[in-house]
Length: 471
Ligand SMILES: [Zn+2]
Image (cartoon, rainbow, N blue to C red; front, side, top):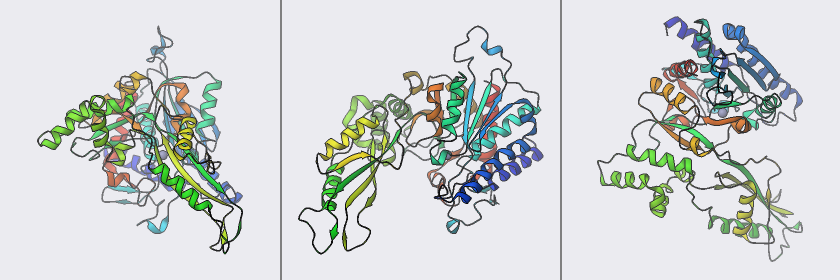
């Protein structure tokens, strides 16, 4: 890339960051704030039109709402000859969201929407999550179109404006739009994972963790009722104590460990990368290479880290407690919220049943929280889970030219992404953003001083270029 083109790319990226597309807390209630937030989302959609003129002359653009914009980049159509339903002929879909989580300005060293550049980094909300993937894809497409490139098959883009709030207006409606038209895809690429540095102790190579499956999400409410009244006359059995007993029982009975195919592929592919210079490293390599055979030893070893433990079971985090509104009233109800991330194989129903049984107390009502919608895990078929699904080769080839050191591994994503709404339309779903980060940079996602290195930005563009060229 010549210097001028590169500088223009950075300027456009800065322009994208400077539009505050966050949804202020409680804006649904304050109508005015909601309107402003929607205007900003629409402004971002307009920004794309003016920033990428060549792209917009060749694509079909469909605007569903401030929360959804869809693009079809028409291919030559040659790929569809002969095998109308094969994975090679179906279009490919790229997903991203342009909304961001709000930024707590007092904790930032700069304006979160100032797009300041300091020591090789661009600072701003959305630089990692995930205006970066959106803009890198746009930059790559714009550049290729300027060079006269036409993709072999149709490439689609669907960008959402409310991923951080569930995707109900964006991704969900966009997926329904595709479904109504009978448009299906060979595979899709969304955010959800990265090239991780120093993630696994004893493994020094960068790991391109390509998300092939996604955990489910469920908030459970535990409720214990009692007669309200004055705190000077408490009953013998108090609601809070019963609730506490339930929580203790639960913490003694975590969900059991289970090895699912994508996680098994992940660990066995990791085994040859372990540093075998030390005896500890040798043991690690051995255990990782035969997770199923070594069962309990493997789980004991892997389960010691919360990050790897989360790959092996449905997790349950106790996140919120509610009692009386004042110190001198008996609460009419004591309530706890549990946040569960469901391992593929579990369902919302089976997890509720497990929690009810682990507690085993009639006084405790166990129900899905009415405040957050739940979703089941998004599993992959066996081939995709093992890193052999449609699109895997395309992704790994694009990776090898931009991140030559990185080892691609199939991975289970423990957070939720917009892609779950599209799963029934795609033969394979991948969750991966082309950027390389150590853990301390990852913690800036949804945190303070979110930033991206300009090197990562440039590599991101070239990743999408390589990808589009070989589809
Ligand atoms: Zn995101």
